[in-house]
Image (cartoon, rainbow, N blue to C red; front, side, top):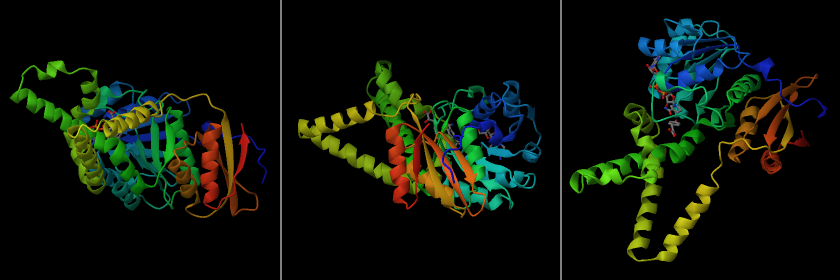
Length: 381
Ligand SMILES: NC(=O)C1=CN([C@@H]2O[C@H](COP(=O)(O)OP(=O)(O)OC[C@H]3O[C@@H](n4cnc5c(N)ncnc54)[C@H](O)[C@@H]3O)[C@@H](O)[C@H]2O)C=CC1
Ligand SMILES: O=C(O)C(=O)Cc1ccc(O)cc1
């Protein structure tokens, strides 16, 4: 197998052509607006249980056509995206199942993945590829009025391949996420839920708590309190304005992981309080400096101009390899910018070609893949 063949950059050959969106709220409408800008996409059809929301998405140009049932939207689609609340994913998947052609991809965008991916797998007929998804972009607003084609630009788009995921299907969804400006990152569904508890679910509940504390203090102590709120308070509480129904569901679906991270948070607040009460400015300084460095180093959404490096991983044609390699790269915090799959003429073996931005990132990914027992050939693009 040669490593001198061209890099994996031919998006057009592998993007889905006909997309169905079930659920045209904030995320569904944003996806529709973004997908309709991708020239290789021929048709975006949508359905929403709420006719008004479907009409708004259509009027806003997120859809080529509005269908009157989920099944009608999905008929003939090679990609179906369920952009509905987590509790509705199972039902929505069942309602499109009979319309899904063999080879189609069924994905979702829900904020929790473990149970949702199981439900997708249960509903999908044989020959349909299931890959969970979760764009880490959104808003405290909901509904189609707030959708934006730009929402996903620079955002991490989590994909949850499993042992069953076919490499070519994964590659198509990966390419689609890239085509709307997002940066795909692979993570196992159960691991996904533990991770988002930290970076999404805890921030929501911390913002909620802070907002309630301030509101109650304003009522009890000084009616003008909230007029004093400057940028810091506004930044720290923005997501408290999110849809309570959405967050009730997320809390119910990810109760264990959220409870554990809340315990960690409560303990840290308690320690902080102790440092303050005992005038331990050394401890307090350490906490403030650690957070200062951490916040300044937060990865930005800007895609920097770093050299692209290709990692070629010879793989056996067996289930689970794609998921293992991509989630290994995700676990060391490296986005795969583009990917290709080669099948050797003799069959049974092939190669995954992964394009990674940055030499240091490429080495991190290479070392992690090598540690899993794979061979990796590296070359600068
Ligand atoms: N709001 C956010 O910032 C983000 C949300 N998500 C996830 O995206 C999904 C959608 O959330 P949003 O777009 O924010 O909510 P939304 O409330 O704006 O939209 C959801 C839409 O789904 C429709 N719907 C509900 N059940 C349905 C069914 N069975 N069939 C067809 N349509 C149905 C509703 O009528 C509504 O229009 C949720 O699973 C959420 O966890 C993911 C990333 C960010
Ligand atoms: O508004 C914001 O900043 C968010 O973080 C929105 C959000 C809400 C739910 C998700 O699953 C992902 C992102």
